[in-house]
Image 1 (cartoon, rainbow, N blue to C red):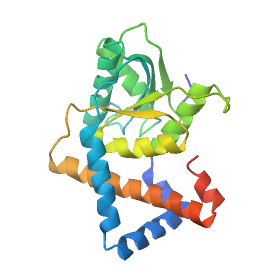
Image 2 (image 1 turned 90 degrees about the vertical axis):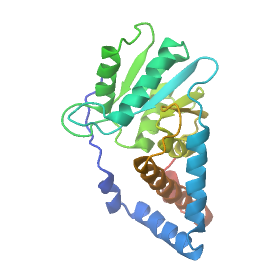
Image 3 (image 1 turned 180 degrees about the horizontal axis):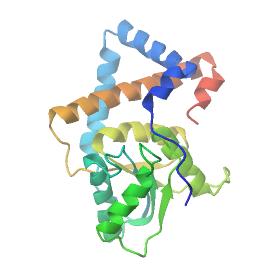
Length: 233
C-alpha cells in the first residue's frame, strides 16, 4: 500500500498558466453567449445526474471516487458512494474495486478511510479492493486508476469501468474518463437525484467545472496548443 503523499488543494490550479488560460476562454464564451453556453452545461449535468442508474448488468471493475474527509472520516457524500459500492459487491456486480483518493487533510488518505468504513460495514472478503492514495482531484483519480489497471503498460487495453460517485459529480467524471481513454459507465451513489438547495448549488458548481474543462480542451485543439490539450490525456 503506497504512502499518501499529496493533499487536496483546489487553489493550487490558480497558479497554473494553462488553467488560467482556459478560465479566460470560458469567461469570454459566457459573455459572448449571454450565459447560454453555461446554461447548456447546467442542463447536461442535471440530465446526467437524473438519468444515471444505480447498478449495471454483468460484472464490472468499479472506480469509487473519494471526497474530502471530515475529522479523517468519510463525510455524507463519500459514505453514500461507499454504501453503493458495498451494495454492488454484495450483489456480485463488482469484480474488482478501486478506491480513489489521497489525503484531504491530516494523515489519512480518502481511500484508506473509505476502506476502513467498508470493513466496518461488513466488506466481503472475496473481492479484490485496491487503494489509490496519490491523487488529489478527479483527473488524478482517473490517471492513477489507469496506471493501476494497465500495470504500467500504456499499450494494454483498459477494461470497461463503472464510475461510481455522487450524481452531481458524474458528468465531469464521464468527460475526464473519455479523455483518458476509458470506456466509462456512470453509477450513481444516491437512489434518486436529491432536490435540496445544497444539491442545486453542487450541480451548478459542477456545470462550471465541466464547462471550464471542456471549453479549455476544445480551445487547445482549435489553436493547436499541444501542451494545454495534453493536460487531460
